[in-house]
Length: 227
Ligand SMILES: *Cc1c(COP(=O)(O)O)cnc(C)c1O
Image 1 (cartoon, protein in one colour):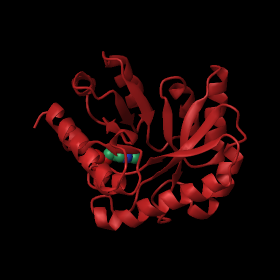
Image 2 (cartoon, rainbow, N blue to C red):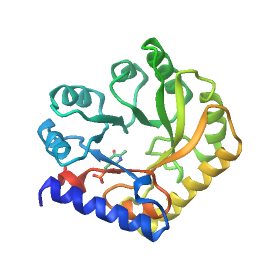
Image 3 (cartoon, rainbow, N blue to C red):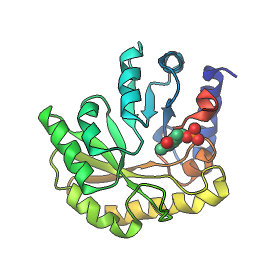
Image 4 (cartoon, rainbow, N blue to C red):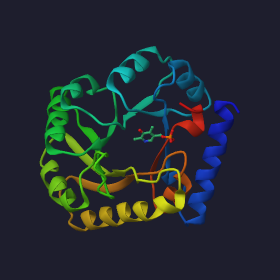
């Protein structure tokens, strides 16, 4: 299967899942996760109409962004150290993985230096797994309130990685919980906080995520093959 075939199949599956849930398929954006894959494959995907990509590692993203020839947009989706944020400023249009105030403050500082604002998502570790990043559901509201004070950030929504990302049925309750958390936060009407984006769903479970309200699905291996 070519990348173009994979993209076509996945777009179709996303659209079908959206329709099953009475959602507008256009409300779901596909983030093609290109980590470990060469720039040439990003260009190949871009030439078949996929213009939004996600990367997990700062160094890899910088090298790849310089090598890609097509005009594409990058989201950062991986665990992020504050001392690497400076290198991302202006390069990515969204960071999905903000999980602590100190990181948000550094993003605010670096984007502010450029006179820009950064769209961010707060990553929630819904299952409370020790090995995963993300704020806990209990700490979420407090973190959102604090981050909302930072002038060069726009909180657009939430992101999660459920414990069972190969089993859609096992992951579904976590997707549902993320949506419920977003609704609770939205009801607080905190100035500067929109809760219109839910980043959830990967190669093994994106259809369930779309049925549960995902607006951003992060798909790697189903597009580019095994890593
Ligand atoms: C690698 C990765 C993905 C994509 O995973 P696949 O199973 O290859 O689709 C999505 N989100 C994050 C945060 C990742 O690290």
